[in-house]
Length: 215
Ligand SMILES: [Zn+2]
Image 1 (spheres, rainbow, N blue to C red):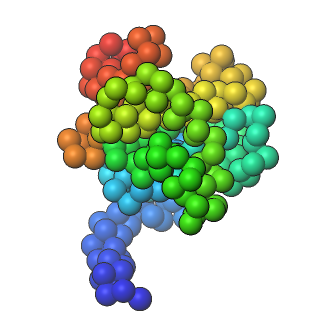
Image 2 (cartoon, helix red, strand yellow):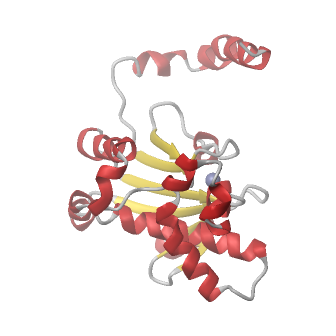
């Protein structure tokens, strides 16, 4: 075991666990998370730290480029779909967040094109659904620099995954009944800002501004 991991475990038991011992006791038999958080596997994205949540508060799905298969191709990714199903049907979360982020390697790879992924056949296959987003980016941003293209790719990817999530009848019913909210976020690692997708203006705005408009 890496020394860093060994020290981390020691610190957890002696400091973090000790400080929240009652919480861990309370959580022994039951979890009651309020939110399903779908994020990229990227090591720089830390959902719990981002929203300041305790254990038991968020149910998390992580994969490359925070993707959700559309309903009609749900059989392509049982890992993600079963976790969504469990969160919705059993845990009855009240909110789903799809969180993309800046400098996402998955989005950058999808933007560079399938041929660049010849050495990574699983990833190549996995990222194929993002090809249609790449086409949109190339069409609307063909004259822009690489940085703006990647950012647009990341944001359009969040919107696409939101739409995929909303293609499930169960999700549509819960939203219609007011029992579930879904939001798309784009987290900027360097600045620490989170931009929320506003469906009314079809743009991303800073989380505090979004709160002011929609509270
Ligand atoms: Zn990523």
